[in-house]
View 1 (cartoon, rainbow over the protein chains, first blue to last red):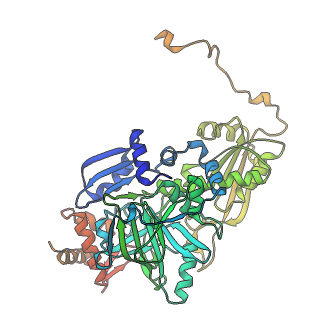
View 2 (cartoon, each protein chain N blue to C red; view 1 turned 120 degrees about the horizontal axis):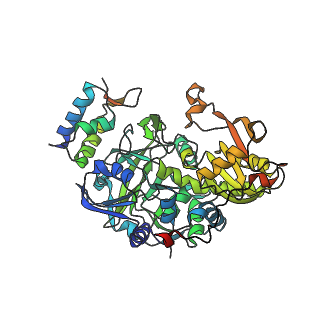
View 3 (tube, each protein chain N blue to C red; view 1 turned 135 degrees about the vertical axis):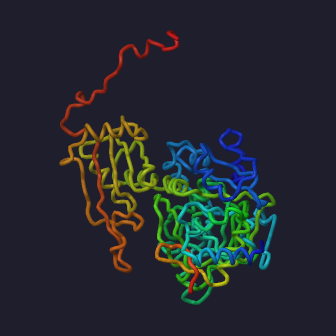
Length: 447
Length: 61
């Protein structure tokens, strides 16, 4: 039996890693309190609402790893291993997610304390939903933001290419709605898996099962022919209406830390809200909680790329300032030319824009160590490679996306820095100083 | 204040000048958040909400 979101909160509570706020909180203040807290928060009472709220579980690498129950250093390797050992989800008869069922005219999204996250956001957003749709090759799961519009309607961002967009386009061509479920308050492994762009034909929920080592339980929805996660805190059921990209959605403070534009998007018509009796609404606060969701998958991709390229890789880390995606640092056991080979492998990945490769003795989680290597192992004319005209993303303003014509994809220049000790320089020149009698003298003996 | 009356108040604010949702919320400090969500939904269903080039809400003429 795999743990639920509720079990994760209980475990964090036992580890004194969860802040309980028991005072009445104005829902306007959910977002700033999550930003200011030094640990995840469980809001016990939100004024005017019956539901609790939890936020900040994925705010940094440490918290994200704690929520998953994984060591920080193993985000990428654990994800890669779990993704290879898939376990298909299991359909079960009912679950806590359906303890309360409201359908049709009873549906009222204002029962949920949906928070406003950033100043220029187009409205309050449900940010932690795992959307499940039925595809031609099985179930598809993804993470999509939902902008509150009215009692039974939200916006959904389907501008970017995705499996859900492809399924929606197929239904739109037949003028049919696409039924979906949105599971909110699920185990972090299930959000992590849903956020991962699985290869075609691979179910994200089967990846989640592999990471759990047990199937994800799914339950039939009450009003649509799609399952939802059986022990989710809250489930929205509904249809993406066949209206195309016609309704205003956004702006939205995105995972890169900048605002995405006002967009035209479809809407979700909510046909049912089901939930636990004492449901907890999870909020993902941008940018870090979304950015860290991408970290494990990016690190796993880098591990795989380096191994495929025959590089003896020691450690891999994304950098927080690059939204846990664009910049990667790797340490390797280097053979002659191995630094450049590693850079080519990393930069071949679609999202990676900058890469630094260092020797195995460098702690890649210590910025000072990495800067030391970048300063003293690098000659810019020999150790920096630049690749022009590579695939890019619109969200990076430096690619000047506003200058693109409709349908034109952005391109970027990628940069790799080989900060390994250069071939031909004797290692003695890089010997680090070691202070005298360090092993023999104890500070406490003199206090 | 009823949902319809609060929606009217919102319409008045947006009619005066375009506002982000956050700016609108700041004008409505005296109202409960859930009441604002309810009124916002009611206002949207009237079909009068528009946006300017910066994504701010306005009342369509």
